Image (tube, rainbow, N blue to C red; front, top):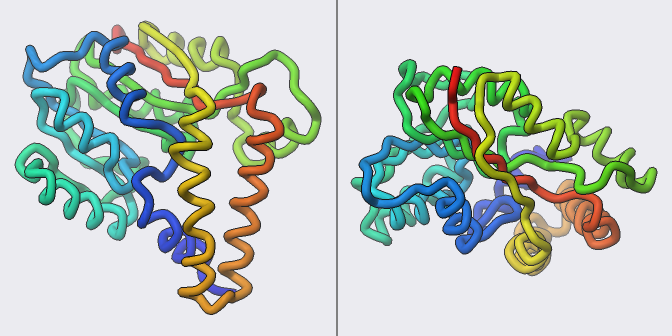
Length: 251
């Protein structure tokens, strides 16, 4: 079977986003965090994908942004976008694992990570990344989150298998507090961030992926896995979403 990672890269590198979210949501988050152009900021976008957030942050803030992803294919797309938008001087890129970041202590005013921290785990991520934040620096991350105390067995089983650290917002906020952050704000991404901004565009790319790989077994497996994820979201969307957590480093 073909390398599934290469197939996933092929499917997602053509997308504006590699996960649920939206440009309007980024603007809302910046408002909740009270971030404006009044102050020069040093920002790192960890797990940036093809750079949808980095581009918006560069446009809306007076900031120098370091965009980090372990996939060079995604970073190249971001570089092309930044050049097209005239933002190359504001966005530096780095191909690197989020678990082995080469940054100095207290280097950044803001750590941004959209739908990516699960790759190393929420608790591990917020604890290890804190060293890179300046005193009173901000952490803004989105994390898969239960929206209810109880949920149907099928969706519980799926997420327990995919990401055992999934939990409620109150539990995630407790992790942040224990790690030395003061939570500022939380909200969860609405349905259109999943369906209109992520899943529907992805569905339109399925046929192209299958054609490019001659309807191979590997490509079919990738498409079927994505279809299963979409189906589960459509049936159980009232029980989970991405929670956006905004917190200040205090310890």
